[in-house]
Length: 384
Image (cartoon, rainbow, N blue to C red):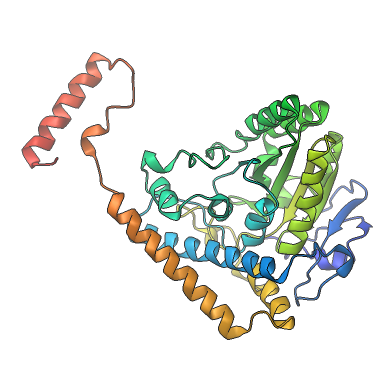
């Protein structure tokens, strides 16, 4: 097992440029100076020189968005274990990554999510009952809402990154000052399509922000077995893309980094690559058992780096949210998720007679025979 969590605070307390050192890596190759950004440390102490300057109202809204994301994640896991939900990828501990990467986007901007992005999708305007439908296997849940400029997520690792760049290239040609944000995990960085996307984006100066959520594990493969450098941000530099490394459990650092990257894209200055260093506290997916390949002792330091608790410490210091207030927010978010679950249950009705309808434009004869036999069995069982 790996030695322990990466310590961004030790790498750089001030947000100035430094040679990043990742203690999860074994004999890493130093790629040179990469900015490491942290605004709010684990004790809730703020670095005022990099503070994005959110209003009190916005800070409380950011906190609630992260709590809602976690409440949805928790409820989904319970429903999956009860057989009410399909396999999905929990995002426990990655709430700052999720919310921070889309907080600065407008309704006109575009977002291309990976399969662990439902916290960001909720903030972008996806109704939670729609996401429940999606992960329960109903086609109605898959297409983005009509008024949300999001791409459908892709299960194929890294395959959505090139199309996202293509959309951004179209934005540049239309000169409409919109922006595309695309996220993916550290495992996707080993896919050739992601390298191609970085190259296309920089050559074309496409208005796209690449967000690599480096959560320590590509399913069961730890980072030190996946790449031989001390950070992934250097990959962007290799293609000429301005790149930085961000404390992905620091919501203010994520918002600050994304704000600069999005503004850069709108100016026509091209793409930015952001490596958000975080940790996957839960399962890769609900079909996974991390105890097989990961020591529980590795998780404990990252539990102390909880992005929600970190922000609550700042809010408490400013007199905006005490422990009772934080508990009230959690209760409100739990109730909102439960209401969405009830809406989902009202519309999630199985339609077994349609399972053959969307496979072929012209159904092959052998499949017609199978369908006819299947329908006869449903008739015998009295299934509508």
